[in-house]
Length: 296
Image (cartoon, rainbow, N blue to C red; front, side, top):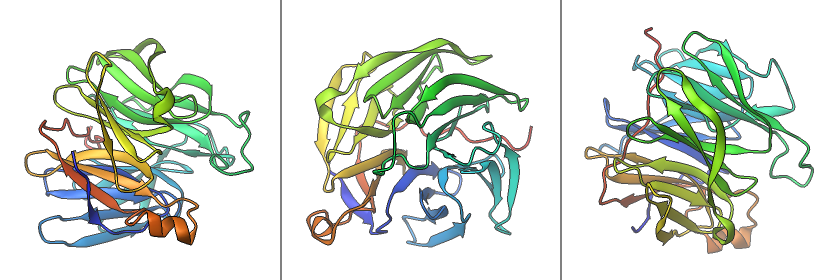
């Protein structure tokens, strides 16, 4: 794969590129400003909505006029017509020390989200500043899956929804859960991959053959098959790979959100396009993301 710059957005940390095939547009977010962006690759049209809060994810819903957003204060629905936010829930009940991170929806409509200290990634962070991993069921009930985590990212399911995978960024591992679509995770997660020398893992996506595309803050994307064997390592043009997501008419465009986090002017010159959205062509169709169900 070869990643080329598709959008020179120059965001501090661009995140969660998610494709809406109904309208042929890509959503992505700006973690620190809370801005939600939408891009039409055919027309070049760019749109923006401002949430004015730290944002973990923005996911399309079954109502095209609304987006599901994981903000620092909890789960919300963003009305794309008015820009107004509707509060849904807050699993940590107003814990101002943490924010919600990468958040996804399972095939049945459950919400999976995690929290991380707002100081994570800064010189002030300590490893005892902990968050949790949560499932919000379709009836609104909150279930604690893991306590005392540092940072989880990138929640995906395999094609038959018998496995759920999560990146443990702090410990540089991939955690896998057996999965029952009727009830959710079965038992505790277990380490499936230790990334070791590949460097810090961040976001991830999955394709229709259950290959995993893992982003690393070491200028690369690694690809793993369904047996958790390393298939490929692709160097990217900039240092920090944040999150991948498939899109395009044939779902073979692999979008990559990147960061320019805490770069000096000299580092920016050496990482042209950092904080932008890159794109590569895949030989395998992407699985895409599941949408939140407003119309229950």
